[in-house]
Amino acid sequence: MSRTVDVDFTFQRPVTVSSVVESLSRSGWSPVEPLGVSYAREDDDGDLEWESTAPDSCNQVIIDLDSPQNQGRVVGISIYSQESETGGLLLFFADRTQVSFSPSINRRKLPVAEEMTDLPWYLERMLPELYASGLLGYQAQDVAD
Image (tube, rainbow, N blue to C red):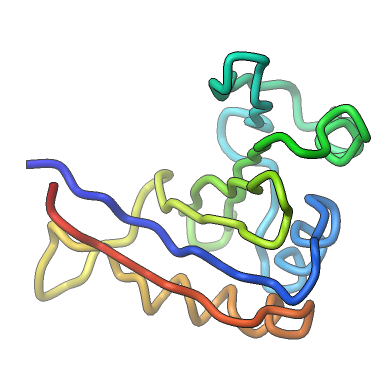
């Protein structure tokens, strides 16, 4: 059985990849994960094309994802907590007021139900900084498909 796990964030006004990554960095998150920097751009067919690059390219990746050529397109970047050895993917939707996080790198499990994700752990480490950046609300789900 598979699961759908994500947290959908809604912001007051459009955000940039740069501003969200910078906010989350204050609580220990980084776009640099064990594979380097993983990121995606929506192609002309509406598909996300994921790529990885070296950690020293991180700033250039963020600049590219925020560039005018990617406005109105879905983009994504991985985030990772080195200290906790866990992370996931941030997807920025076309209007940039909606951002979704999927814990996919060494997903933290609930001790009482290991098939489920410890979403409160992620929220405690993300919400304070995102709220300070104009977060209006969020919706979290962990459901069996």
